[in-house]
Amino acid sequence: MVIAQSKITTQGQISIPAEVRKKLGVGPGALIEWDERDDQVVVRRAGLHTFVEVHAALFGSSAKTKTSINVKAGIKQYMQKRHARG
Image (tube, rainbow, N blue to C red; front, top):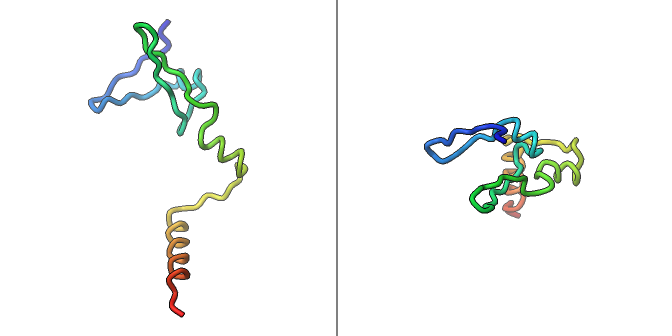
């Protein structure tokens, strides 16, 4: 039974239709596996948890996000401290 169809781009990429993503329980950051069985290729979810789910479990969902400006400022401050003369 066909659930959905995808078109292959010129670069060999496809988009996974929403119906398939829901059925597999996958979203951004999730991995999928392509298994060969006889004359068919089967797609399935690779891992039990996405990176986002693991991060939320370890650090809570209220972990503070940092912008690239915050990260760059932090790196600059660290490097200035590390290489300060004196």
